[in-house]
Every structure is written in structure tokens, then in C-alpha cells.
Length: 139
Image (tube, helix red, strand yellow):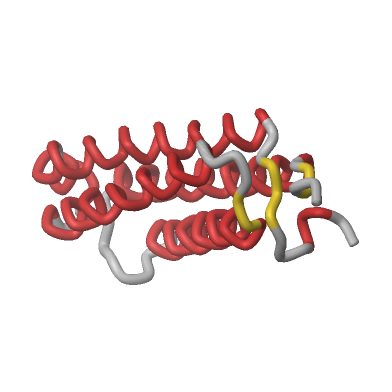
């Protein structure tokens, strides 16, 4: 059975570590934008400032988790699958928001949500590829 389908410890390779750190870095930038610029972004996107701020705050533990996973010598494959699944769920959520489900966004807001969806889906795909390239922990 391929490494990416087993629920066991893997040794994250440099590619997976790099993608997880990229995800953490982009998420950290998003955190700063959403928390420090919630009011400005709300005016531009049509999304409520309190929602944007709350999402920014919620990303803080996500960034810490991504960095923790990226820096372990070995991690359960299930944790990487969780990252991939959560990113895929976020991308789907952003697509739904961009399509008008839940919020009445401005054109800039639709673009922002669509950009979030595309970027997060890309990261999920790259993390899946990195998981496939990672080796199982030697016995």
C-alpha cells in the first residue's frame, strides 16, 4: 500500500516541509491582513469586519499547527491528511462564498474569495504531492 494511504508515521521530505512552511507563511500574512485590516477589507469586499477579524484570529493556531507539523522529524500521515482535508474544505467554502452563498460580496470580495479558493486548493494539491513523496519512518 502506498505511503500516502497508510495511517502511520512518515518522515516528511524537504518538499513537504517546504510546502507546509509556505502554507504557514501565507496563512500568517493572511492573519495579519484580516486582523490589522479588517475594517478596510470589509469596506472593499462587503464581508463583515467582525467576520474577517475572527477568521484572522482563528488562523493563528492554524499557522502554529502547520509549523509544528513541518518541523517534526516524523509525523503521523493522518496529520498531513488533516491539513489537506482542511485546506480542501476551506477552498470549497471560499468557492461557495464567491458564488454568493452566505455573503453579499462586492466584486472585489468575490475576487478575494476566489483567490483564497484557488490558492488554498493549490496548497492542498502540493501537500498531497509532498505526502506521496514522503518516506515511511524506518522500523
